[in-house]
Image 1 (cartoon, one colour):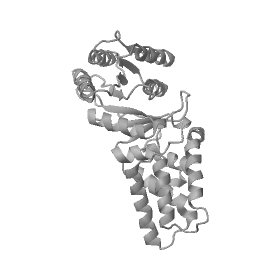
Image 2 (cartoon, helix red, strand yellow; image 1 turned 90 degrees about the horizontal axis):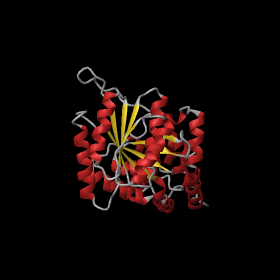
Image 3 (tube, helix red, strand yellow; image 1 turned 60 degrees about the vertical axis):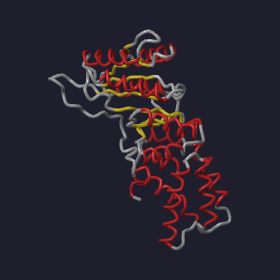
Image 4 (cartoon, helix red, strand yellow; image 1 turned 90 degrees about the vertical axis):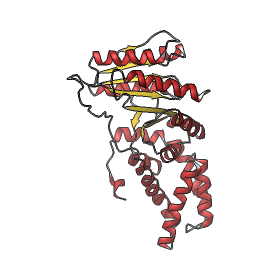
Length: 323
């Protein structure tokens, strides 16, 4: 397919290649064993491929879709050599990602919003996810990227359940040198979100990023809390939040699917960030989550550096995975 002829930015692409190395090596070691001694793609190869995709955390439903697409190619072409399997997998997985609108962007962007009553309307981003997935780090790295573009960023520490969450976000605010609105631990998260949005409007901020608590032990409480946070923000900016970003830890594999299930049931999630892909062989989870939840993956974490949260681009991802 022609989109694989794209020229990618070398520095970021090298980081992505390196970040996906474990996933790629694990996948292709299994694939080479599956096709050993085989010259054509037959039922046995497809059965083995199905098992490889499932054990690579692509997910059962997404795996079945991929296998069905390859079966259709086999029937259409009558003969499909195992040497062509890599190329076909690249094409079919890229096609699958295209159906969710995942990874169209190549740079950090926010839409320009119409001014309200003559004043600038800030872009409000609410970030959700359980503790330990890299939520605070993702917020800090996003703030850095937006500030690097010359945008005025304000952070809101609405995860008031843990003192550590407020402290960790403050560390990032200081590191990136952006203002942060906070209250004491145990404060009403909605009150913090309200203050943060109000402060951002007064400061004529371009982007306001609101951190939220990620407790999953009671879905009803989580739903009520996030709904309340949204409602109070809308008193200041009527259509806030403009994006609800769910952060998932890619290294947890199938557990990331479960978290996505819980959060999409509790609130309207509009985009995804999948972190910690550099330390795992479970990179296939990006493909499955994007397909299964039909929510675009916006960012992926492929390293610990401040630049290593990348805008997810499906062409670059598939090229790195199947290189």
